[in-house]
Amino acid sequence: MNQRNFHFLLTAILLGFVCSLFAPKANAQNLLTNGGFDTGNFTGWSGNHPNGWNFGQDGDPNVWAVDGLNPQAGDFAAKNFYDGGIYQTVSIAGGHAYTFSGAAFVPSGGSINNWGSFVQLQLLNSNNQILGTVADIAAQNLPRNQWDTFNVTFNAPNAAVSALLKIGTYTNTGVTPANPTEFDSFSITPVAEPMTYVLFVMGIVAMIPVIRRRLKISLSPTKKIQSAVAASALLVALCCHAEDPKPVQKLPFYTFSDKMDHFVPSGWMGDTGDLSINNACKEKPAKGEQCIKVQYSAKASQGNKWAGVYWQEPSNNWGTVRGGGFNLTGAKKLKFMARGEKGGEIVEFKGGGISGEFPDTFRAEAPLVPLTPVWKEYVIDVSDLDLSTVIGGFVFAVSQDKNPKGCTFYLDEIRYE
Ligand SMILES: [Ca+2]
Ligand SMILES: [Ca+2]
Image (cartoon, rainbow, N blue to C red; front, side, top):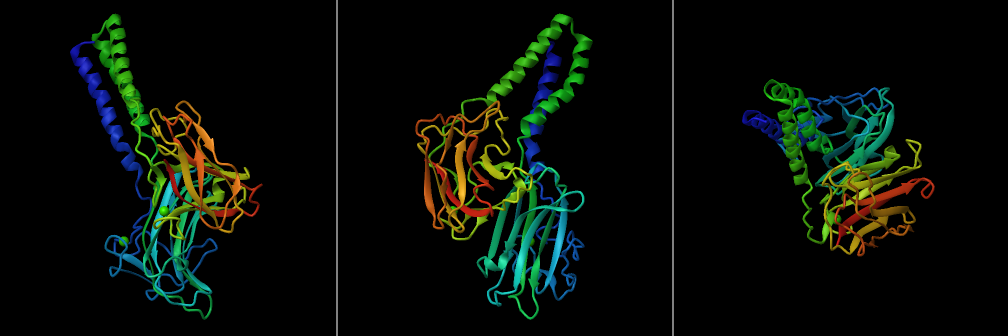
């Protein structure tokens, strides 16, 4: 390969690599328009949804307003004074994971019966039929007189084409809510997928005709072979770089303390429409301010009669990502806190076990025991296992068979130590 072509090839590879580094950022875009009301008005939002949900009074300036007195973030928040709701629909892709987050502020006071302020996110198919409700938050039950934030990760069923976000306040006749309820900071963002290397390889593939043309012009067959060898060596060098031994992580290594510390709950399995996960639940956390709340409906939405979620590194890694995962060598125990809403919920908990080309190097599970209504710590012994690659840091599974009416349970303090 002559020097000019070599430099051209090198530039192409580096350009592809640099471009791919910026790709995941574009992925994390908020799909909602004006989710934080910071235009100072209701741009992007509508009222009077025709699909069995109609509060009628939205648009009435006495019912809804946007003002800057108490925003959760930015300059403005939406205020809802009385019976009324607004909504927004966004396009989503079936089979992909998304994160939904937002905030509500309900003042104290008001009889608690027959009214409520809600935030609801539903997934719809192309006929506008509801495939699942991934968030159904009764804001009046959250701590009052403060901004309560919520953060839900969900996997859209394959048939889903849109997500419908509805927020508002309802009251039955004669009951006055505490008002106004305020809403702010809504976002629906795709969970970033491991696109970096995919885009990188795509970039190289796209360049191949150009590279070939250039090589053809000036190179003999022997030189072509030499060029191909040189290009392969470069690619191998770049790939091997990603396979450098992973550094051993410091213990304790948290999956969840008060937020998602490491690993992403992106690996949704089975009847994904039956599950919803709130990663910022404030209902009696075991420690700190927040815990994880999991709701399972047992409706068998996709006909599997079970559902589960893997916490993965990076997100959506089903053993497909070269160099993925963490090196947790030295950890002796996988510990977590759990409680059931009622007690008696039967949930399977595990660590590791993802197969594939670049798999987990271990698999360990907790014995199947009914949860208790008070927090209890569970310990999975991993002392004799190879933890050099942990990509499925934590996983739970629930079945209709063991929980015929569905179940709700809470998790906190998930960590390796
Ligand atoms: Ca705002
Ligand atoms: Ca916590």
